[in-house]
Image (cartoon, rainbow, N blue to C red; front, side, top):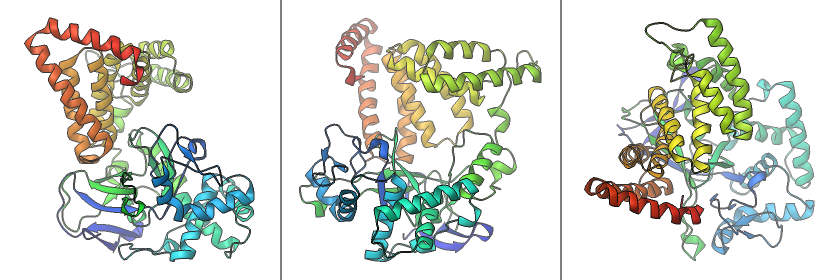
Length: 464
């Protein structure tokens, strides 16, 4: 935490600011989780220690709930799991992830107090719970969670009021953890220092999960999972550090509504106050200086929302094509609804190995994203990476390699050189660079080689 200091951020409460100038991609600080759990739905697919998605995980022989990569991961996690293991055995089943996380937080508070290291700037007890701001329905759910906690931990020394405080803290401070490829949310954790970083819809930092290294046979030599706060660009000394709590790919009113509901504050950042890029996100198509009528735009937007509900649920390519056909003359290329349809269509078509059509949709999606996102946004980098790989598989090696190089430059800033995503992308970049040289030397030889490679890949789908 040498790069930051705690300060009074006015109406936002406490905040963190830099103590020196930072450059793009620099790690501002790292922090291990105070407590973290895997989601219920993925408890058998994700290691409960390092949060990597794996096949053939080893199950805890005692509680039969927790799963691990191997014995080294299990040993490394035992100190955190042992009380949970006994509670699950006594109860006969595991409660939901919120109850399990609250229990892990309280066990650690009881064992180590609310501050576990000199670098932790705030005690868990001091984090905001916003219980007074919760809706009636949220309070009912909270009451049920407290009762489930008491059933799960009947011998707890903590009263209902303090347990409610912990649930409130988790509700508005919990950080979603992703798998090692950054493609799926797999769990939730509490990081006290990270909780001090305030929100901005156009932030100067991003957060990634580093899953640590468990390759050593000696668990004491493992590096634990931790978040890394990384600078998206140059940050001047004494400048406040910010991250985004919500997806920027929504208009300001929707972001403000989501922030108020989940985090109980009114966002007044510059992006929201000035409705930054809202016009692009809801843009109508302009042809020869003319735009469609407001009534037609509203009609197509309503139709798009109805289609999206079906498309995102069932991944239907035919409906995606029909929706895009109706959107094309009416909605702009940066319109959110069009970008969402393009994203699903390109993803599903790639899964079906229809790479040529998927590449066209992916390219249009990336063009729209580039006009909306911060140039070093992680979501933009991931989208460009997927589009680049799709173009590569479609045989469009020049465009594909260019996109992969652009994605690599972004992910080097947002994830760093040692992250699994960046390392995978570097391997792909080297492969496409080699193929591009072959293509420029002799196109016929390149296409012959590519056809043979695709036949092999189709017989082994994991290669795609």
